[in-house]
Image 1 (cartoon, protein in one colour):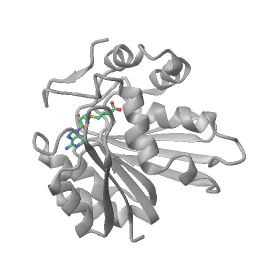
Image 2 (tube, helix red, strand yellow):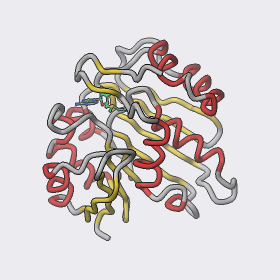
Image 3 (cartoon, helix red, strand yellow):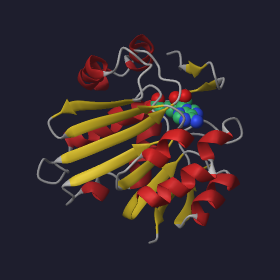
Length: 222
Ligand SMILES: C[S@@+](CC[C@H](N)C(=O)[O-])C[C@H]1O[C@@H](n2cnc3c(N)ncnc32)[C@H](O)[C@@H]1O
């Protein structure tokens, strides 16, 4: 399988080892899902880079496989993206995972054709909404009004994409976080740890996916 690459950042969208397994390890397990959403009627996930939508589909699959009585009846996934990919690119990137087949078809059916718009409110299925915000996260995040239960911080390496890991992003995470909100990210870079700690997150380093030594998880105001 050819791992999709960003032409802007010269980096891969997900691990060449197994992107879906990486997404489950870093973002789902890293945010203690599905346990974190048990008993909540409404649950909001906010992601810092939609890319191919792999993390969104991993979360949606977990929700579909969860006990109907225990999962939130309203799952809202919000994601920012400065360089939206087109449907063909997304399909080529993800069609390799047959287990995503049905939900990939669903995503492609609702995904915008015109990528020049700004905010798309998409009804994915009964109980699941996807808000795609196309633009620079530093411009768009301050306009967001929500209560976020967990954060997927996925925005290419801080060394090659410092804009994604700015004080504006960290401050807005604190502003938008629900009580006890969690985050998970593939990076353990000092700048990211310090930025999150400065706005009130308790940050822990844990084992990263595959050959990666470390990643970070944490909770706000524990
Ligand atoms: C590692 S990729 C995300 C992979 C994605 N979560 C997936 O499941 O395929 C990082 C994404 O962040 C986007 N990005 C980078 N800088 C950004 C910025 N300043 N604002 C919004 N999105 C940005 C990139 O275009 C890219 O799609």
